[in-house]
Image (cartoon, rainbow, N blue to C red; front, top):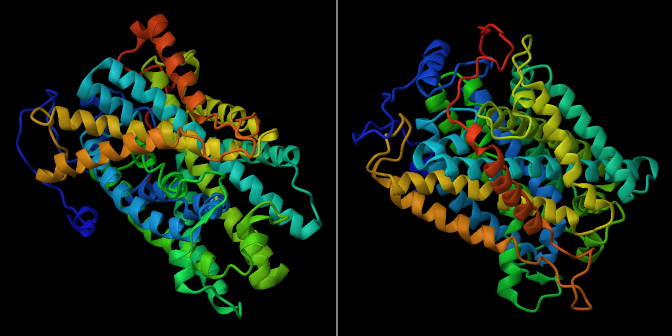
Amino acid sequence: MPLAFLYSFRPFHGGCPVLRTRPTRRAAGAQADDAFLRELGYEPVLARRMGPFGNFAISFSVISVLSGCMTLYGFGLATGGPAVMMWGWIGVGAIVMLVGAGLAEVTSAYPTSGALYYQAEQLGGRKWGWYTGWLNLLGLLGAIAGIDYGAALFTGAFLNLQFGFVPTPGKIMAIYFCILALHATLNLFGVRLVSILNSISVWWHLGGVAVIVGALAIVPSHHQSPSFVFGEFVNNTGWSGSLYVVLIGLLLAQYTFSGYDASAHLSEETTNAQVSASRGIMRAIGWSWLAGFVLLAGLTFAIQDYAATQASATGVPPAQIFLDALGVAGAKALLLVVIVAQLFCGNAETAAASRMVFAFSRDGALPGSRLWRHVDARTGTPTRAVWLSVAVAAVLALPSLYSPTAYAAVTAINVIGITPAYAIPIYLRIRNRHRFQPGPWNLGRWGVPVGAIAVVWVVFVTVLFCLPQSRPESGLVSVTTFNYAPIALLVVLALATVWWRMAGRDYKVPTAAADAGSGMARIQEEVV
């Protein structure tokens, strides 16, 4: 099936027995959106101030090729090198388009802040929704940690060039905490500011990629050959099996291509949500696929010294590429472009994660739910959910103080948490395809085959990224080389199981949220 078909798919109206008793219709305007949300079982309490572009922008900002590609570029240099990075990006991007299409179809039918777990509950029952929610939450919180810690690393590299700053783990952690505090503060001002920042972020990312690639193409006198960029294989993992190295090298692309469920999580704050959220998912993936390919190619063509790039004193290989190709002044300028993009990305991810915390608490699924589901009456923002999100993200990155491989584990936490959560609603939609009532954005007869491919891929990458990413020289796994991502996954699943037995009876989807905002009135304002 041509990928252009998925990208430009228009609403399709098909008939099949309805899974829920409420009619599906295309929402038009904030009042119609709120009326449909009530049909889904929720009283609107969040301010619906985000337009279609803003909804696309948040997923595009969360995917953020200037965050994912740049922060894991050094990982890619060691796990397969240029060949795996370039061809892996192309292949993974194609499959993620299918995963995104399957998720977009289900989102069109169920546009709520709970997104994946609400969809799973409606299609499969309470336990499906419960575990999907916990997986989704793990992935979103891991994403905040991965994005903001990556921004801290690049900030440390900039300070190294500017002031001779030595980026020790302790200093990087301090920068990381400051970035988390910044993102929490920005999110307290409401979705209007979040939407404005995300709109700016889209143009900053596209312009930033153009500036970086343009500078690296024009200024250096030496460039690598196409055969190097698309054919050079490098294995510095310690593993002897080339196929295994190629597979774990896909983490760079798969990690970057995550977070597009942000469009679904912000659907209760988006107008024409049944269509806008689905299109936001697809457009974010498509544009990121193109921009990321251009960025990776530009970086790799500009490598001057492969070994020196890997062993950069700045702590981040892309900074060394900038330094070797453009000099100190040029490197500092491009690093600032990247850092600002990463800050945009982390801010958008904080917004998405906090909405998931709010929605899950609204349905009574988290310890202290009544506390976390509170909505500020003035801004229409779940402020306590924002603070909880950044606090957990701070804890997830703490192992980076003593483990050089911990950052890759944090990114793997994002992948093995959020990616299965994408697949569960798609799987349940396939299993219940004769009862599923499509929304206005759907795949028609392609829904089942596209969904099947998506589910198989998700199972594959989830298992893959639980495996060891590097082999220690002694052959024995130690604290500094252990991939603790599977442990984080097991801990969350165990917590979800224990909490289900203790408080599962209070989990009800949907549940009225009249008290979520302490009696706040609905806020009707112009759409950004």
